[in-house]
Image 1 (tube, rainbow, N blue to C red):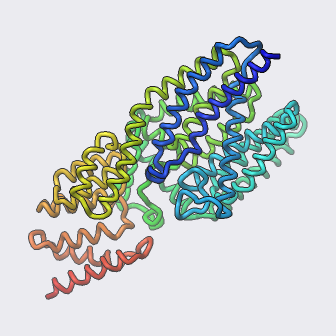
Image 2 (image 1 turned 60 degrees about the vertical axis):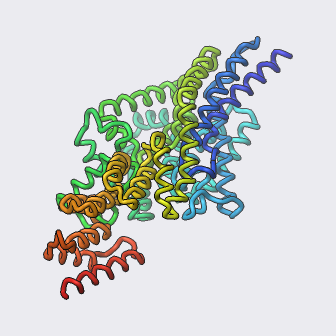
Image 3 (image 1 turned 90 degrees about the vertical axis):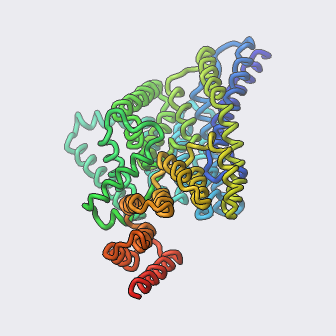
Length: 541
């Protein structure tokens, strides 16, 4: 009996460390910027190192039989975390907890409702699988069913069409696996092929109708996704084999969009929905942009092999969660967030591994190595991000000299964050350090396709007397996002410069500023138009 207690204790321990590593999704830190991920990576690093110690210690104990399987540990961890997130979402909806975004009432532990809904959609097929198991224990059915009900209560409120689609398709697949639909289809194909064809046509019609309804729910958002995918495909076409490099999506996308609008052959709706996204809202396209098509195919092939093994082992819940994530990844950016990256890193081996001691040791060593390799830098980056919050106070207050000293010290650790680099470069612009400002802002262009970076570089050139260069940067900004009025306003002021006076171009820019319909009207646009009118009065005088 004592040995049985030891086994239960070991199972509890390995489950606890698995849950601990995956629970980074619940980690929040008010001392960091909203949406900053480094705090969650620090949690994972520490949990991974703790997992090495705990699993190694537990495996030294003498026990009989196999350990808890890794797939079971991951499944129950995902159900628990899905339930926790669902409860948090319900509390946010009823006003008992604050969301992480001022524009959305429902975000869970995430920054907006999109990834939150995707996480719930990933947990749902695991709950369904556990609930449908005929040999499952009663408490397992009650627990999985309860979590499933909680998720279904809050998932519609997220208004994420991609999460709805992912949840529906993955749960339908799990149900089909349990109900033996494949065998029924094979039998129907042998007995009545016409009937099967009719059923397939009706099913496709329902899917098309559902797609149309989902499109009309948020048409501008849907058109925006389609346009982003179009620009991403153009970026892929530039370097289809080697890609543009890991982390280079923003600059590749910005250059592709700039070239597209510069050609002038585009529709009015494309100008309206165009933006400066950080992500492709399609992980497959973003992967192709960054690492190229061949390597992307290899990655997908590896995932496919894991899924195939998981289906052979009848791990339908784990496979359903991966299917849900893959569908959601087609419309969103989950793999840019640590919670999804770590969960995918757990789901894939959960398809393959069993419950032997050797497999647990290998997992412990791999996760511990990953955590140990990352921990030191992640801790330094986390501290730097907190210091950045303090420096931001100086920046927003206009104390640019004091802010510059802080930004200069933080630069080595935060030089891969576009927002930090823009603030640093803009502060140098305010201090009239034009050359240093342009150097920092050009680094920011590697991580962001925001045309505001081009505008500030152009203003630096204009204030330095390099008017032709300033014109080039402002024109690039109008091509990158032609729907923005601000760069046309800057061009109008540039053409009114006494040393760079160009009356015809000035009139053209004034006309655009005064007549162009803004995407969102604001007091800043009205102020720009008033200034342009004063330029007109001055020139007529």
